[in-house]
Length: 247
Image (tube, rainbow, N blue to C red; front, side):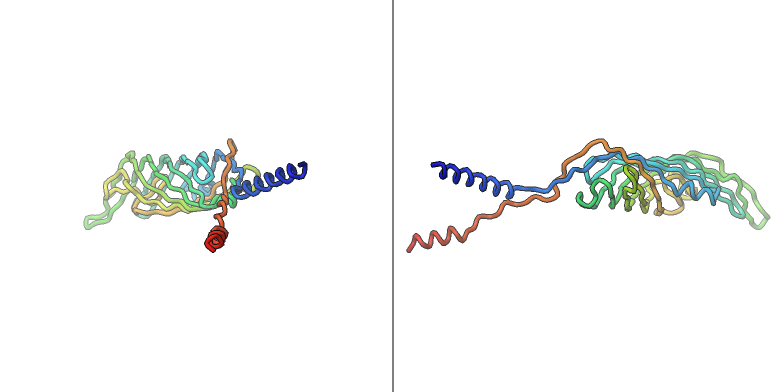
């Protein structure tokens, strides 16, 4: 009787082990983070070119292992001069949207990001032309265009990469591809350059940005990386049994 009990218990353990294996799955603990980023190329450019000063930063919050909500803002002071006119523009901009991580969780581990960001941008700036000279048949005419405040709208896609280089500190870069929706001015007075977008004379602009990022973990989530499918029943056993019965 004892042997029967032992055999029965062993059989239950084997069946339970097989059941657990059939429904086993691989999981990872992924940290969700609040990220504070600072763009570093703008101040570096100002060291060599005093006519353009830009500063930009952003804050993002992880929604899950793939998506982060992002809000960015910045400031620009731009000056341009050539032989017959001077131009000045300064103001602020905001960008809002999301970042999408294209890496699998087992590759990103909450530390690495390679994907694309999508943004809506709004720029509020003033622009003016303090000096404008034009040569004509009667000589040289001097004039100016008074300062005015403009509102511009644009869309942005920003593919890039980012990696954690020290604990809770990351570095990375993005390529900005921007499409202008509205400059806030007429087609004959389009701004030469304005915050958040760049060259206002074109409908599309590009840029390259470098960021350093401070990461603040606030939560961990469990992510399923591989779910095993239960094995299908062996139909050959049933067929063979049925055939034996017919005989």
